Length: 168
Image 1 (tube, helix red, strand yellow):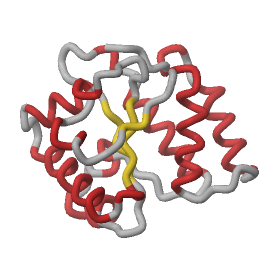
Image 2 (cartoon, one colour):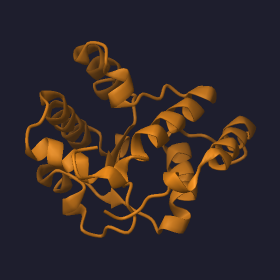
Image 3 (cartoon, one colour):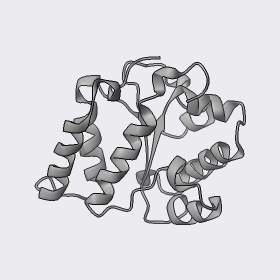
Image 4 (cartoon, one colour):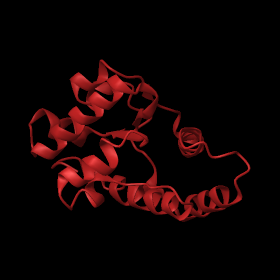
């Protein structure tokens, strides 16, 4: 998180655990701040540029701030790649608000990105259920997939109050 955004402290651990759950059921899940530590071109080729990859962009105030300040070429480059993929393959990109209580998405996503997509947001009580459904739909996981459902149940059981989206 950017300075002053301490309320985002739960985001990275949450995404890392979500990545592990998805990998445990056989999905090729990558998270930029973990998996792009190797050469950024490899990450782009394997994740952002790969025609079959589905991209979830999770919006946070820090994402917007880093993009606006051009703080790190990587954030701007990734957003531009995601926008390009969205223009070419709209069904392969989903933008998700990690802060359901924030209805002003201009606080979570870069300005230029919002003009090209629909932001998925849900009431906080339905956040994890809807995220599970969205991932299953994107990756064509049937509703009765035992391994996916059991890993998701374990994931939910592991969440703490600190893993709950709270408004900035």
